[in-house]
Image (cartoon, rainbow, N blue to C red; front, side):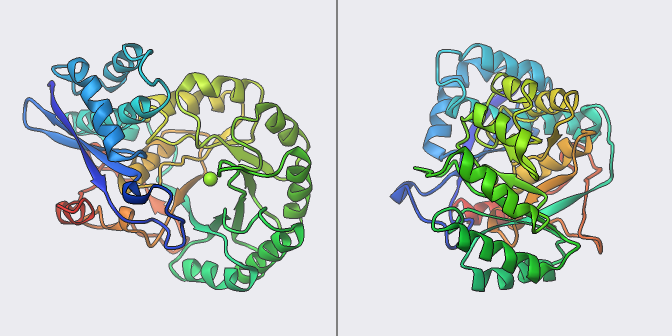
Length: 371
Ligand SMILES: [Mg+2]
């Protein structure tokens, strides 16, 4: 089975109501890719990049992927990586290959009648804990926001960005205290400083002092506490922080992860399947991290396709415990014919059907892509 064509499908709208628009007219960072094969089978991948960049990357890759095997995901996408070393490696080209790789794993699943997790080697779990991911707000509003997610069945919560680290240590602690008081003592709480934001203003000492404060509120991990390229700072922080340190959502290509894993720069690694190179690349990163006792928490939540890829990766990884999940969220719920639901313990069930094991909503995709 060969790849016949691939097209980019932009998804419009905003994930967070309170997220500031940065790109004007181009405020669109979620793009699906649709792979069509010579035998008529099709599949979707997800790319966290604006559609014009994805479309340009697909144009560049076209002579390479046209006629290539649609059911040899690792071999086909490695061929794409190796032939584009000089063309935006690690950037939009790698992001676009991520989406293609995801679709090819699904096609292999459709052809063999097997779920992706089995093709990756088999599953370690049937269910996994999703955490409700949300932006931080002022302390007096934080509790209400968390309780709305708790009412939807979540038992784990991550709050980040917003005012955290942007005003004072006092305000940071007030937000975390309000959050812990709202959700109670038994649910998981994670904090994301969002230091990959533009012009992040803190360094190692702020991160260490803040980590000590977070320990008092039983925070499970502290994410992006330092700028995402500061590997030496992360090594120090991971060594001395009383709470686990997480990072890696902006890194791409498995080669970039090697020093982070080998130097144990984090306790928790967060590759994003929609950017890193797809399921193939992320599975390799995850296994290497496992051999170094590092937990992997996938970051592909930005569309429903990314979430499902994360569920398959997490099923096939010994070192998985959580997946990021944003809800209610149009890019997630509206893409499914039947959106995933949480069980009584707040867990998501890993799909068991062929490929992704879910049905996409053509109507939802049409609506989000504006036709
Ligand atoms: Mg983050």
